[in-house]
Image 1 (tube, rainbow, N blue to C red):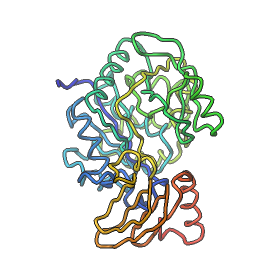
Image 2 (cartoon, rainbow, N blue to C red; image 1 turned 45 degrees about the vertical axis):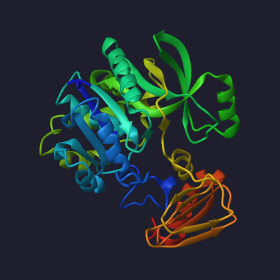
Image 3 (spheres, rainbow, N blue to C red; image 1 turned 180 degrees about the vertical axis):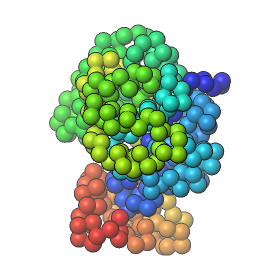
Image 4 (cartoon, rainbow, N blue to C red; image 1 turned 120 degrees about the vertical axis):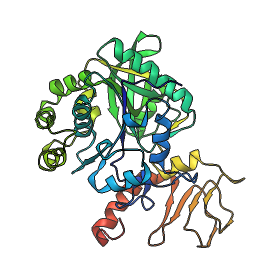
Length: 361
């Protein structure tokens, strides 16, 4: 399908994937891993997916400065100017603002698609067609658009979008965002039929998002706007090194989308998973006759059901009597954890750091 020349894509690839510990580590987070066992990293799969929307020269990757070499290794099609290395982790609001200023220096009126690097998309053609619809809407008016996913269960790890009035064919106003509700609230949202999961995939024209930052997050806007003459020049890295860490840490949902009155959602069904946890990997992966996902060639399972088993090549695992568990052996760390309590893995990782330091992170 023909590419659209004034569309750019920013792939967010700076997270550490703490809920995927101990597979995801500080030195090589999950987006750089072949977590699906298909021979390509999640980042590589995301990059290739967007080649159906725009040329490789219009795809930029925003990551932590420590991972720029990893990005270059996995995406050799990119020039160094297309790999944006953040000197600090300040969440997605400064990240988006920096990217918007940088791309505005290349194509001031372009449309930007912002997407995570670690999602699963089972129907890529449907996904790209939905993006084209959102891009067309963004061209018609000053709109901030997010893709919304129909919830299937009361997940407490996702943000929720309350859907308002339909604005045009299939695109709705957003009434409000709610970030990671408790189980009771999530169930109420599900029962109401008025809410979608927030996929964290955004579409907007550069002038629209920059005006939104100027209006709703002027502190972030001011810091990054001052560097606009340095972006896309050899001075970019030094400016960022000095000033980027001074920006406020905030997700773009809270800094901008919860405050703006021009936010819209496009309900989308394209076989989506954020692949944020081991349980979501279990859900999206091929299973054996007992609903187990086994990511090793050498395992003997006795009376094991609905469990994910992952181990390094050449290591034999013998497991008996587990149901609904996560078993992840990374050589130096063995995790055995109830799948139903997977949200607590992030806290376990923090406990490991407190007791044993950085060695196992």
